[in-house]
Amino acid sequence: QVQLVESGGGLVQPGGSLGLSCVASGSFFTINTMAWYRQAPGKEREVVATISFGGNTNYADSVKGRFTISRDNAKNAVYLQMNSLKPGDTAVYYCLAEWEGFGRRPSNTWGQGTQVTVSS
Image (cartoon, rainbow, N blue to C red; front, side, top):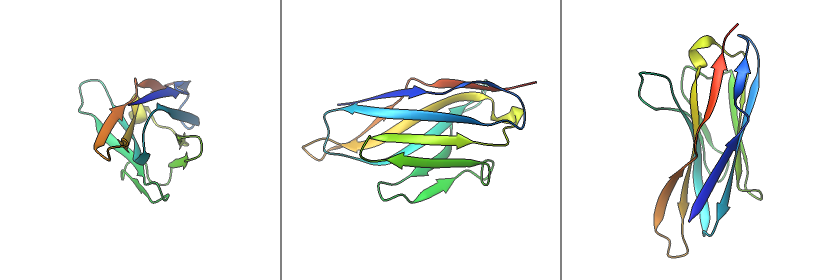
């Protein structure tokens, strides 16, 4: 099983920056794709950015050029650096890990979520 612990959310002014971290722990064979999602009030959860084990990244159009996803495989961690934040980025941000147990069965685990509020 995999557990995810997120940190780094908070309140930031428009145009500011914030960094999120997500660390995985537990017993598993490997963690493949890791991703950040977000869910704003009254809206569906949406993907923000994904990163493969090898470091290939994809971003939602709304965050391209402003957000950067990265990971440290040795630490089983994924990060999201958010720059030029806008009020529309306000949401609960969730980390997702796609992993395989020692039986190589794929599974997904979500983090608990961390609030990001962009407001003056």
